[in-house]
Length: 576
Image (cartoon, rainbow, N blue to C red; front, side, top):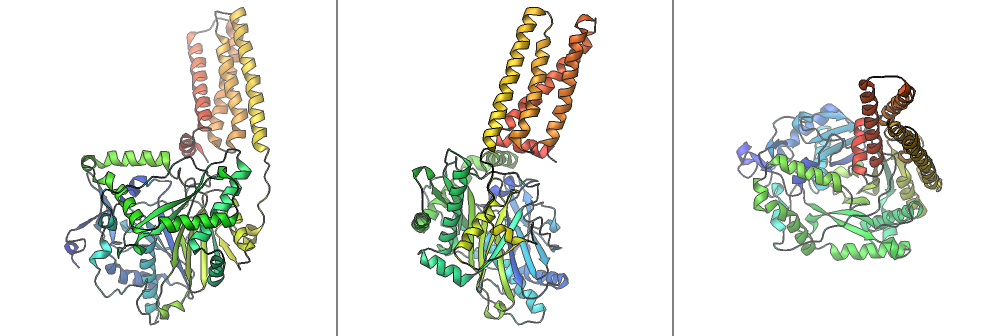
């Protein structure tokens, strides 16, 4: 097929409405990447897998692209190369996208034992598109291994030509003109903890019998999505009760496949997110109340009219005349700053359900399970993907924090419903049963002890500084030696208090300040001694400069304990 006929008669493809923000959000530390895996009953031969990949690529022109920067917008251009097949590194999943990797493709194909995996940049497609592409790849792989596999469901016929509707931007097509949708509000609860190093995440997958899950959901008159959303709400309400006196709203983001409401066959993005919100200040909730309220809300809001209004709200900004003439570099900067300030601020956690994977009958016997994993969050510790094949239901949790409280609470809750459960992780493979043990009790007075130490040490240092200034004015008003005392004691305060507040954070940063604090203190002592000995102005300038720099570092570090964005930036520069 000629390039001119690939994309509506053009040699390039515009990004869909949802995809336009993802390139600007893409950084060296984080990308919006979807991961979908399928486990076969046979081990994977990478040579045959590469042949299967070459066979199916012409059927998916929307995947065979590389991203390009225009003057005003990003766009896709056809890519004639072949993606690289990579052996899976389970420790590092959903790593940030680099446009020049994998032969310029925006997706990667991995293999590990009997598992085939795709990681795709969200600007390219959504979970549905990943499912179709990978299941078609797995079917072709089985054919090359000598098995007769038919087409149907989520396995496309690779001998037929790509269809025009598979490339359409369904957001533009189905938006309701003039309709408006309300936006999510910030100031919601986030479970905090020590972040894992860059490119690392804790991934835990639970395998359960689908028939047992359906029976449990039927008991509560809920769908699978509604039931597990309610489980997630309950555990976050419990977390917040233990952590904070001031209770904030819980907001669970639930992506939905809009193809279920509209007649769309697109393989590009066509999903939006609802927010299930609970306010703990209204009173205590039983699990039955949570699941009932969740079910009512999702059934009420999930309709064509609401989705059409959400499409229109998202398209409105893009369609403004001024947006068409603003250079891409400015758009990138604006979107990047906006995302840096508001990323996940309206979301406590995320739960997405791919549903039951529809495979041909003659292929099902070769498939053990499927796994959908959303990318680890920036603030969200719990980002959960649901999927099922045959009678195997999987729950995958991606966690960006060191502790495993979320996984423990979630799977312990499922275990309490007497659901048979098998776990696998990428961080504690030898003893996954520890994730089903009760969460260890933490020292609830730890925060109070830190606050007490900070107040006590601060008052002591403040008193010492005031005393120094008074003595300076009364005894030696000509020489401002008390200024050095204030600076030095401030740095010492920083060194003594911040490690308690920051908890292992900015280690290298504090090392630098320790050196500068020592220099300042030494300079102060020399200044006091040399008050009675003639000395040059160069020495004074050296002392003052050192003191000012030390104070600036102290002030910056103090602000970092209060400002999450500054803290995040400093961690990239100084954390090891």
